[in-house]
Image: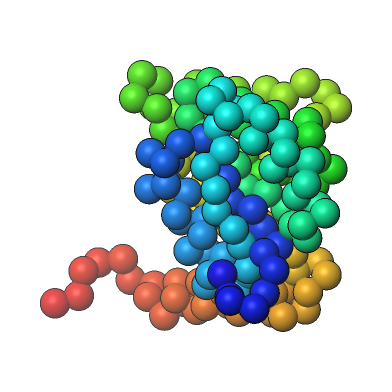
Length: 168
């Protein structure tokens, strides 16, 4: 996060063990120039902290929250129940069920509490960072331009390398 800027995206996770996945959301936000904050906020171990974080997020200037969780994965839904901000859920792979439990816990929210659910693991975290930037870009032309540039670079990389065979 830039030293003089207020964060616009909150990147939270249920445990420090979720960081190897969630760091990919942060890397995308950094690439696109979006200020963010990171925090461990456990739905099960620190529910009061979770409620305080979610209820105060908009007041603090956040525009979107990216929440990663594994196992029962209650964090994204519980945060969404306490804030009007968009919440993007990232299922973190669990040992027992390879993240399917996390995915279903986040995706199967009851009608009336919306959580945008991304893919399991690194791809989901990367896309959550990208989607958060796109949301911020609705009101920030600089961020929108960074997203457009990122997409143009992806397109050009494919066009520049049409032959999939290794080159010696």
